[in-house]
Image 1 (tube, rainbow, N blue to C red):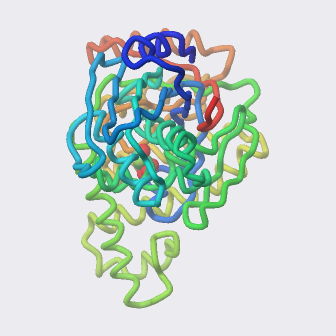
Image 2 (image 1 turned 180 degrees about the vertical axis):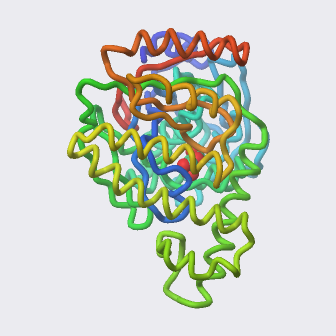
Length: 381
Ligand code: GAF
């Protein structure tokens, strides 16, 4: 993304030459709601970014301007309190960096980007990672990339109030062009391998909706998984998360489970197994097999984890009739945002025309679509 308009705004508002930090949004091929269960996920960074222009201002105040919203905000560093809106993410990152010992002083910030908001592409993680990376640079924090990603996650927990896992911040930090990450969310080990789908493209279809229960339901899902673990831990003290639970063990204790908790746990265990299978299908270029796993992921998210919505289900279901689509599913936390589709490259235009027309007719909403291009992780220019 070019930064000329951001630099001009910075000059007009504050003057001087800022440091420029960037971080991308992400897609996720498969492995949804597995990250906070210490399982596996398969995200990739995309070529859409949030960019932060930063400069110390020799005060104890942060002055910030969000160019796309045309909004200015400021806060003092002495007593940072959570609030609403985009500035809350800035506060969260600053406070969490300080908690890790980084000596953050007052600074000026202009930020903007082209990660679509509310589309489930992790614009908030992109902002957190760009900002944390930039502040670490200008205030010589000395934190490594992993610590910076974890600062972003902590900002979500303590300021945005979402008890998210590590997927989004790790993808935004460690993503590389033409690569997908297989992330072990327990050990935090990152395996990068080629996003090798010659003859196929990944297409995102944006429902254009973002239902408001997303963050409260997200936290509830996490608690339901923890409730399942608490039951099984009575029998095996070594169980710390659903990552440690086999389907057989879960089934053996079914009668002790509330049916809703049971199906949440069953979904997570199945989804985690699907990530392993998908990684091997992708490595062997077995795209039909990969597509089946992607559809199965959606079915579980819709019926067992219950984080889908009618717009997402419509967009996935209609693709089952399209022979040029091998797989489709909702992506991210759920309740809106995008579906991800594995589509034959030669049929992408035809696919977009057909699904856009169908969505307009059914929901009365103009469908936005994006053909995915991978990008680089967080960095300072
Ligand atoms: C959101 C969260 F931020 C991630 O940590 C992850 O749990 C995802 O939902 C669901 O897989 O993007």
